[in-house]
Image 1 (tube, rainbow, N blue to C red):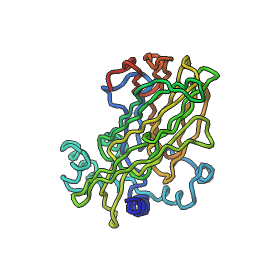
Image 2 (image 1 turned 90 degrees about the vertical axis):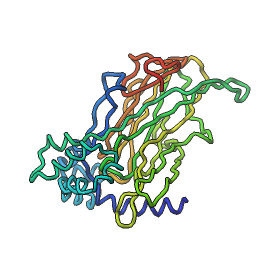
Image 3 (image 1 turned 60 degrees about the vertical axis):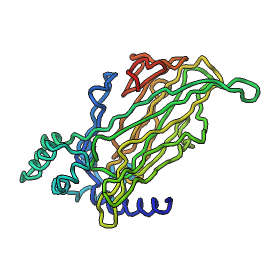
Image 4 (image 1 turned 135 degrees about the horizontal axis):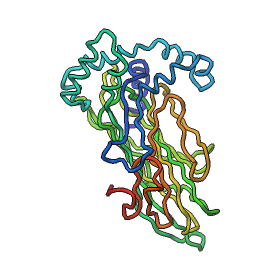
Length: 328
């Protein structure tokens, strides 16, 4: 299975990078799940424009290769819209388009020149995510108590986006005491993003990735995974509609507030996703590299792992007893 995945991923990267390197899709938190005013809609069209507006020198400084820049400059955005619209109805339904959305997509593709407002109007794919408390407790380590909390970060796509390369999830954490939280490796705590078949000839591929504790950034973990796979003809066969990652944090103190920024980085034009950290304490956050749309779930948990709405800074965050949000 591992060899199949590696071979499929190689085929995927070779074909999809040229076929769907840019897109018009967007993802955002669903309106019904908003729990904080700082939620934003992220549009891949805007990300594309932000990238192409930079000079070649700026792109090189940000890690793009000369080949990347050629692809960026020569990319025909409207052609990709028309390629998507040319798919048959059943394929688009498999992509989770509604019948009305199919009609809207084809109307846009039939235009000689597709205006920007129309591109935005058909960018309705959404990705929702949430960070939730699972459980907490204590155990004895080196004859002293160690306090732990188990957490879960989940996400799901409502529809297959145009960008389908390699995505990343990352988590950074901090506390308000000298006894800081640390990541504790647990055998069952991994990132799951199964590749669901969108083609009748294939079956689901299990995709389980370990968390990687950063050697460059203090108190942060991350995992990369393939968002989709294609066959040798470049036809989409699998897509990771949803996923989740569980993780455990430990602390010698049971009186520490916990700050967490759990973020999803959706790759648009960079095959290799990456991130950096900025700020400190409650302002500590994850910044993904150029060409990655970001979705954050950020909150400050009390010592008992409840969370007040005023301490939910981004996204949907659930604390103990669901304080600050509805049941996960």
